[in-house]
Length: 433
Ligand SMILES: Cc1cc2nc3c(=O)[nH]c(=O)nc-3n(C[C@H](O)[C@H](O)[C@H](O)COP(=O)(O)OP(=O)(O)OC[C@H]3O[C@@H](n4cnc5c(N)ncnc54)[C@H](O)[C@@H]3O)c2cc1C
Image 1 (tube, protein in one colour):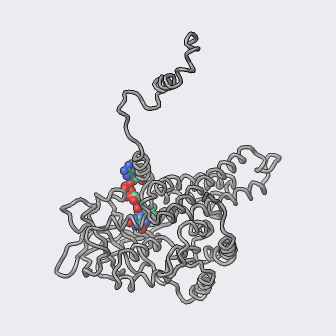
Image 2 (image 1 turned 180 degrees about the vertical axis):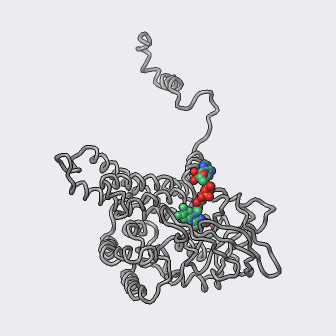
């Protein structure tokens, strides 16, 4: 019987270390260097951050999801999940622990599909945390439906020439290279006619038009680029995987990315519950503590139950990924998690904000950022509606239509069958029926 909800003592000790380490050394980075997580380190930041990364490595917690051949310890997704719950409450923590999105997913596909030269050039420094990467797929006219993508690469001698527009390419402004999804064969459907290229950021023709912000981030201060690829020339050797393979590659990447976001979301939502409870126990109004008001108790109970349910599904799915070693086999549950994630974070952050009154909605508390974050979770890596469709299709695969006029569980039909089965015991009741 293998169902066990306990963490091994050795790993629990590592989690306890990570918890204290993040609180003491990493969360302060969010306050002194906000928004600089994906900017290559300058000398000052390097002096502060490299020693933290060294401590993480000494604990064996650097990039734990990767196998030893890639510099990790191969702990797998379940352990990463428990660790990410701690890291999720800090912007800087995934960087310090070598497991930040989108670089984890990007590293994963280069590890899977890259040539030895591509791995040497991009994967090694990416895994070492020395450079950052950008995944450039969504286009201004549509992200949810790849059939609308028009950015194209045309072969010209030994080179490919890329032209088109991409939108919301995260971290483009600080990335060293972009993974760009482009149409290479417009004569077949998009799932067979699209390929990926590794494009160095300084390639002529890669024009970042503006860096779009989230919520109240203004002007050009965001991290999600509108990019005009204008006659960008790359060699054949820049293609990642084979021609027409972009969608197979994207699936490898997105499965992991989605559940990693969910793991971190647990940590973020838990921190909102922690703040909610502390406030409820600290603030009195109308003659009693907030914690004594039934409405507030309802907020706390609903938040606790919602997060607990979500967490169990995330941990179960992480366990399933480790068991099958294949994201595609757990597609249904990854999609279900993706569907639940924005609602869980939104509801809990909203209640925590409400309990804090005016302070809660101010920029002196983190709740409005969390609520925007919930919106992000409903879009990044695909909108909730699309994932609901995936869940439904996967669920329906386990069912067959009935040939009968009535449903299989139609009570009169079942009752007749039951009476026939137990007829000998019912004979004496006939007169009463
Ligand atoms: C913070 C953030 C970071 C991102 N980072 C990246 C990145 O690094 N690289 C990248 O390439 N992209 C990135 N994206 C883009 C993201 O993948 C897209 O936003 C997403 O795929 C949706 O595309 P769209 O925004 O064009 O919305 P649309 O495709 O226009 O969809 C808009 C809405 O229409 C509805 N809808 C869409 N399809 C369906 C359907 N089939 N059934 C029912 N309703 C539907 C949904 O409500 C959906 O939200 C990021 C997005 C965010 C918010």
